[in-house]
Length: 445
Image (cartoon, rainbow, N blue to C red; front, side, top):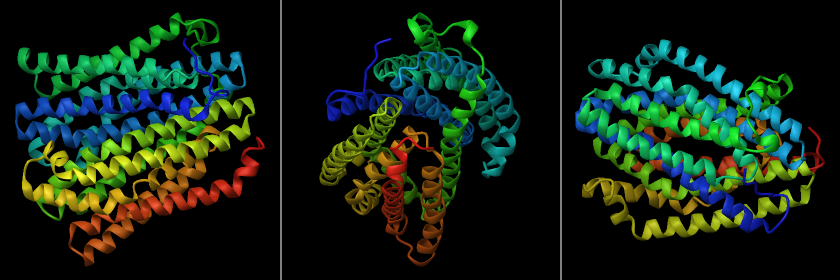
């Protein structure tokens, strides 16, 4: 394995080079659902709606184990920084055990509860059958998805963010080809579109397994080591479970936000749909900076380089804020042609521009939120950021949203809830970091 030692060397350069493949991975991940929607669109409006409705159910089910992979990455990066080869081996073996057992259980449970969940989110009856078909077929990919996330977490913990990105790219491209085959050759409907994703996810997962099986030393995956080590499992759950719960709850809270957006009419729904795509240009790199800081913190925390963590926090915030200001500013300046990529309706574009003029001037705040939350996770503290984020992004945003939209029926009433809750979350995380920093960086738990 090509390792990157983040415990020494120029901080800014290391974080940037580590973050770039993470940015690419996030954009590639968007490719899966986008391609599914494109091919579903060729089957008709009902098929598109079925895939869209099912995606929320799938996201809720997947997100918990995605959070566990955060725990896996933190434990592994701390072990790498501490040069604890035995713990690295146990972490890899535990990760594969979680993937096989947890992924399998997730598939079975998800397949059983899919009809109930689709009913809970008021899925229209005319698309229920297709929605169930798509979701149940897609849920067969739980073992590959969990395996890829766990194994890529191990690779990133060792400082290699490039290899997982390349494997995800291989899966994404396979998904494009397989979708075409399923729709145009076999005429399999939305179920076939989901199966294409299952196979593509399997390709990405198998590539990570092959990579670790061929690695040397403590990074080598061996069948005899695939077991759930109790101590490692508890550590992974301690850090990963709060991150998973956070992701699940935020996904569910987005349903409430979407319901308020829907009340404004079709043009507003389309404007926000386009906005969320445009936003990815700013959002995705900021999240990547945070993820890079989490691995950077994990390695340095394990190595006892506490001053380097403080320097990393400052450097990440400066780089991320600079990117946010420049990218958001350019999009505000050239907003019309950017929105036209996703929707050519002038009324929709006008509404989208009104949204970015409320949110984008404050997007630099988001890097503060991400940096402190992921730095805390990198030290093994996952519960405080979970509580702060859920209270503000879910509870406060929902209350504020319902209050404002009931009194101010303009698109800005929805838009303003985003920067307000970013600011509150960043404030609370900053206060917590500076209040607990001395204790955190002394190595106390």
